[in-house]
Structures are given as structure tokens and as C-alpha cells.
Length: 240
Image (cartoon, rainbow, N blue to C red; front, side, top):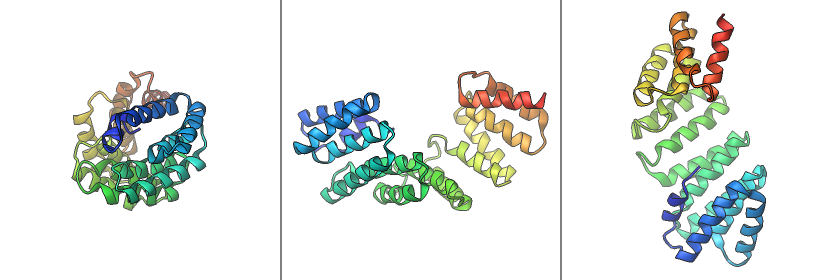
């Protein structure tokens, strides 16, 4: 989820009143999407333009109407690009995220690419390259996905979850040296992460290193509330 502040900073052309309305509408889209749809539709009729359409797309996504949300966000992104608005890249990104979350990676990919075309290189583009990698994995294009992850890490070696994603994909591809090297990098950045510890166990288990796998899974399982912790506990139970 893109922070509200980042969205508002990306649209300095908004007046104070519209910026406040925009922020409120997006916040309600998260907590009360049905109400936000009505608000955004009314604002759009009043001439709310791109911000109103963006809020509508987020509200549609919030209530599970992904098909309309994708269309709304893509339309807003095109309008923003034509207007030269700083919101365009973020809108393309959210359209891609929505499509990916709806299980439509083929539809997500061109939206993500449109965002990347506006992002340039380096840290701004790194999260988008990881998002692109996720879509490529879903499309069974693992080699291309690894290239996208490497591009992300080249732009920002500390991009969130980058090394963990590289380790997981390398394990799935059977490249265990690369997986081990990547999980070590992930561990340096997030030493207490249940997700990192769980994947370290998976990498060890894939190579038949049972004791190492169990130790890593046990560390992950200590985080009883996380998805990774629960998965680690299940993996440990299966080995008993």
C-alpha cells in the first residue's frame, strides 16, 4: 500500500482543501469501501478528476470488485500521465498490484511496466522490479523473474524482501548456492524475521540438512502469530 503522504506529495498541484479531501477519501476506502465508493462517485461528478477516480479505484478494490478497480485505476493512470501528474507512476503501480492480487498476472505486467517506464533507475524502481518478478513467477517465467529480482537488488541492495525473494526463487530453481548466499544477505538485514528463518529451513531441508532445517524452523516457529511461524511449526511437526 502506498502511503497517503507519498500520494499527496506526488500531486503538489492539489490545493489544501482537495488534498484533505483526497486523504480522507483514501482512508475511508480502506476502512469503509462501500461508503468511499459513494463519496468518490460524488466527488468525480463535482469535477474531482484524477484524485476522485483514484479513490474510487481503491474503494472498489477494498470491497472486492477487482475487475472494475483495475479499469478505474488504469484509466486514472492514463489521465495522470497525459496531464503530467506525479501520480501517474503510483497509479500504474496500484493497478498492477490490484491485478496481481486478483490472480491476473498477465494483466498486471503491462501496468507494472508502465510504472517502471516512469520510475527511472535505482531505489524508486527497485520495488517495482520486485513486483514485476512476482507477476513473472505467476506466469511461470522464473528465469525472467530472477533477472527482475537481480535488477531490483542492483538498484537498491536493501529493498524490502529482495534477498528473501531471491533466496526462495533460487531454491525453487534448484540453485542452492545462490539460495544460501541470498538468505544470508536477508538474515543480515532482518535477523529476527520468521519469514527469513523459515526460508533458511526450507533451503537446508531441500539439501537434506535436517538438523539445520529444524533449527531454523524452530526459530521461525517462535513467532506463533505469523504465517511463516505457523508454517515452520507445521514443518517441524511433519518431521517428528
